[in-house]
Image (cartoon, rainbow, N blue to C red; front, side, top):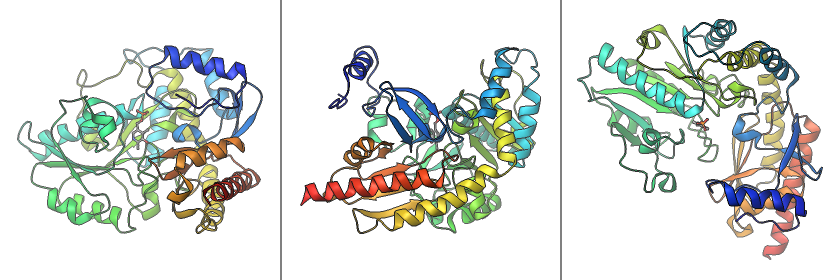
Length: 413
Ligand SMILES: *Cc1c(COP(=O)(O)O)cnc(C)c1O
């Protein structure tokens, strides 16, 4: 049950309704949001909070970004859903723009992130059988320990989060899990039937885990030499979050396939995609794969506006410069209740000293100070504010964190 201490009857009633009628597959923070603008969220009682979660980076450009809302509103007046049985006006400009942003030839549009992952897996297998010459049904894909790629039965088949897997089997075969950050383990696990290495360039759900600087370049070199596809799941790390368009850009790596989602929908509508070259995406023919909603006109109009926003580089620049400031300030908390800080750009995993309590207990203290942040695992708080946040707002949140840690320390002693 969500802790409802100190909430008004109005918010208590709203939460009770959700607990009665909704499946309990999340453990939300105890507040009910009514509206949002930029980096701010407002609850039913008019309290304002700085949003340091950004809906797991689906809201990279802030709540209600004017250009994105305008694109959605204009498309709402025209046509919203057509299915791909016909062509729609915004679809072409969206996929051309996205392909160009990625420096690739082609786009396969889907809706949610996990559908992009599933589509990437299907494409890699198809490429393996039709291009690489892997014997039918023998393809394997190398994935990383502590990955998070979504929630479908195939994707949890190669998760090592037991909570996410328990009682959901039987699982899909064809995956080999190796430790994250070890090129030796990938080389060891690969054989003639390996069609892809699938990884997050920075592992978000695992706690914003950044691999050694030479890891992704080594994966790129090895996969190229061994005729294996490199698939980067940039659903959370991509689209400006780390200070570059893609986290892979940080180390000058270009994967064969990008998996995109979350922020691609501008915080308005689910939009995801696989982006790659014609040697892989060109293998799909009518009827072999699809989605009723994938590439719909509303999604395409919003997705195109997101691409336009990223083309200017302004969001990436904000993430880079403000991110440097955020990380400087977080580093200064090490030894004051924090023992490690990881990340890039406006994205940080902050490990809390265990004697101060769980990361979640610190998130409650942050909430009481007007900052929404989520724990991931027991010891890490993930900070991922919208990239439109100002330096003053960042400072406010870090001050709140410092204060929360001081309070926790006083109570622990
Ligand atoms: C969120 C996420 C997904 C799944 O996206 P959904 O839209 O929730 O299906 C996949 N991969 C990564 C890295 C993610 O962060």
